[in-house]
Length: 334
Ligand SMILES: NC(=O)c1ccc[n+]([C@@H]2O[C@H](COP(=O)([O-])OP(=O)(O)OC[C@H]3O[C@@H](n4cnc5c(N)ncnc54)[C@H](OP(=O)(O)O)[C@@H]3O)[C@@H](O)[C@H]2O)c1
Image (cartoon, rainbow, N blue to C red; front, top):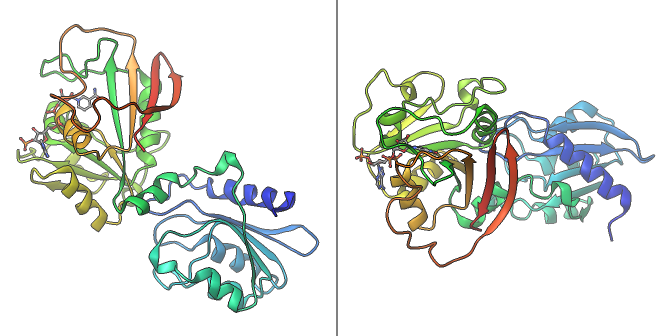
């Protein structure tokens, strides 16, 4: 049975996890340590790939003052030595009396972590996160379940369902607000995938520049697929982010290649050709559509040809919103 105070402190840990602007390839994790009198004595969060885990951050802040306290964390503490030491060992060594967590760690390397804590005298409670925070790492968890990166596809459409006007000139369909929001979506993904068709037609930069430009190591990896050569002066070849070029391969192989780079979340920002391939192989998990109140009469449709895996099926619209003068809606396929 969960106490109100446990739920409250888990919410505080969740808020901590939301502080870093980006946590590439890793989950968002926050922690708070509460002493015997019920006061928070340390709060902290994980800053992303290769940096200290949230538990280590708070225990380090406390030095020797963690004895007898309770540690709240949204993800169960790890018990393996990777880029950082084992959190379970630190928790035991520092004398934490009780650990309250809300999500099990899906990483197979973490198996046995809870049993290890209990065997070493630490009381452990598994308590559900308040609803407001339960989706914080949803795509990361689904990626483990599916054993491949979670794929969000984003597309901008006109009212008459076109993604371009059929000419060779670059067409901006949606407004500034939608553009800024797309940068936030990019920031939440580990990689951006597109086809040579989009790169050659639009010469996009495919990096995060709003509300601030990320340093190269925090940018999503740009993954460009297709046989055609991209000229050296194209923007995806600039130094702002890491870019990987790959010959024409199936979407399944694209995701396998990205898994090798520890990518868990992908944003597909392609034209109709590659999007249709991903949809047909049932490899789009979420579709984000921006619809602008304009009609251009001619141009390419959102998909190229017949959709096999998604035709005659109904999916959920998980959210709808107005972004500036454009409509945004999300379709969930999982
Ligand atoms: N409105 C929007 O949101 C939006 C977004 C993106 C693009 N667009 C528009 O879309 C147009 C480009 O369309 P597009 O369909 O050519 O772009 P695309 O889907 O990004 O690229 C298609 C190319 O990807 C390569 N490719 C790699 N793997 C493939 C696979 N498994 N199957 C098929 N092709 C694969 C092929 O190039 P190779 O021949 O080189 O192998 C193919 O021609 C542009 O006008 C652009 O403005 C609109």
